[in-house]
Length: 150
Image 1 (tube, rainbow, N blue to C red):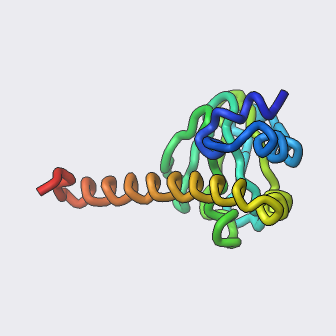
Image 2: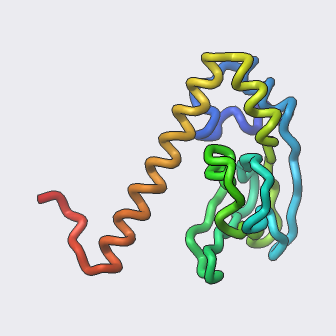
């Protein structure tokens, strides 16, 4: 059952059984072979995806690898939040299984349950904050700056 598979992912941390089941009910599981595109840069879809199995590689504007996301990781969250086109390509590294939660259905669900919305969005903010911190540290390191506390 999908709800049991996704309930321990970071994005759904703190949600009760019924809330996870509601998200699972609107989600789709997709399987990808190595090299297949999971998220296409500049596309207008706004769903968020959770890596269940395998690895997803996020590639930036010039094709460089920005990161690799393993089981439990999320991709596509920026377009969910800002309603802008996708900022990167995400491709499958080897065989992978991905849960896709369509943005329109997710927002409708969040509108119907304030506690679910608060918990989900809090988790999403934590993910975004962690990614911003990581990017800031990476930028400092590439510029030769110390990241140690002073």
